[in-house]
Image 1 (cartoon, rainbow, N blue to C red):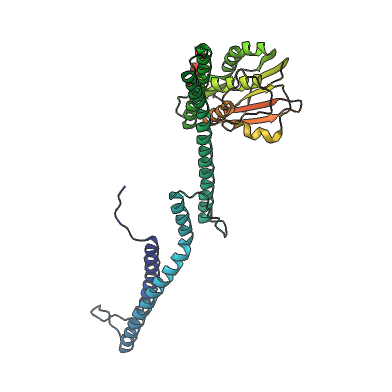
Image 2 (spheres, rainbow, N blue to C red):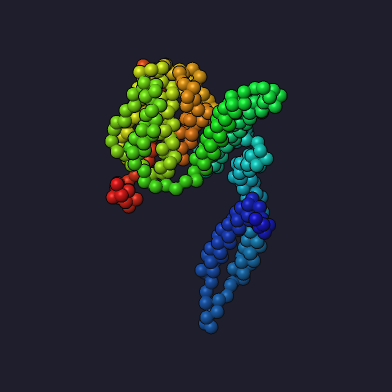
Amino acid sequence: MTRRPGHPVRLKLTVSYAGLVLLTGLVLIGVAWMYLLRYVPNTDQGLLYLSPNQYLLSRIFARAAGVALAILLLFGLVGGWILSGRVLAPLDQIADAARKASQGSLSHRIRMEGAEDEFRELSDVFDTMLDQLESHVAEQQRFAANASHELRTPLSISKAIIDLARRDPAQDRGELLERLHEVNTRAIELTEALLLLSKTDRGTFTREPVDLSLVAEEAVETLLPFAERRRITLDVTGEPVQTSGSSALLLRMVTNLVQNAIAHNLPADGAVTVHLSSRQGVCVLEVENTGPQVPPELVPTLVEPFQRATERVRTEEHAGVGLGLAIVHSIVRAHDGRLDLEPRPAGGLLVRVRLPGQRKNSPSAAAASSGR
């Protein structure tokens, strides 16, 4: 956007300061002049006149006033220039930091010293923004590198299978095709997970009233055969809770949590509990599972993309692509919620999701209730 050139802020402040000083001087001189005129007598014709002494005094006063105004103007310009420079110095620091950031450097910080004021607050906000930007860029770079690595693996395997079939026609083509099908299926699942993760990060979805308890029941019902094969008990407890968002994304969130709870469980005779509650207008979903001990230092890494908990027991079936909890975290964040993971003392993990509750007196909630 093109803008017309303007004057520097420092020059504007200098002129304003000098003008204020000059105006104050004029007011003081005017008051002094009025004080002199209060003794001027009137003639019979009603005209004002000055005595010789007063006339001489007025001329001396006029010269002195002119000199004083000139000194005040000079003092206002010089003093205003110096003071405005000192006042605007923090802005120069912030501008330099912003200029470096626009050139791609995000590692520098202003760290302005001094008392708490508006400039200090602005610099602190700018430093916080740089922290978040640097963290976000680093996260995106790691994500891109990991995604490239994960996508390259199935493509390399597919190429190796195809090369083997071309070099050795005697190979069992049925077995090769089955292996190729499995590899391509895994690549498709990874691509779909990446697209879903990108969609939730952008927040491009329509919000609507969602009964989270019905969503949890649907997810549990879908995964019940998988749990039965593992001899794991699935249980849904709690009360009906209402939130707002995308029902499809929230279903994916609960499905991923329950699927992870089943996959990372005991080899047999384990348990998964899904509990729903409402606390002070906040919907709380808790997914708790039995299993081996989870090291506390491992917990923060579980929500990072492509971070598989190799120290936990898991099955080859539903092994996932390393994006399960990363997608959950992204969905929760897109719904203005909070995700907490806690290792259970007896083994296993407790995952707690907090989402904003749907107001019961809102029109959308009333429509949803009447629809049921």
